[in-house]
Image (cartoon, rainbow, N blue to C red; front, side, top):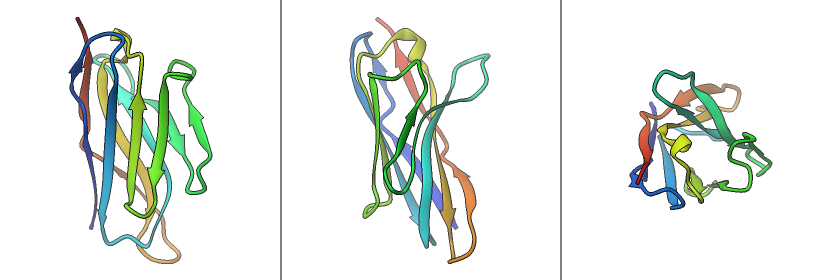
Length: 120
């Protein structure tokens, strides 16, 4: 079994910052690409940022320059530093990872989500 557990969501004022974390645990051989998605009420889930195992990153245009994705491969943990938060960043944020439990397999996993609310 593999689990992704997010933390760090909170209520924050516009212009504020938050840091999300996602810890992977269980029977893990290797973690490949990881990413953060978000889903606002009434909207589809969208990619926020992703990072490869080697550290190459990709960001949605709406968060470029404000959010930073990073990972600690030794700790099997993914982070999202969110600065200059806006009300439109309000959503449930989900961690996503492609994880191999053995040398030749790869599966997609999702965390349970953490709520980020940006409001004054």
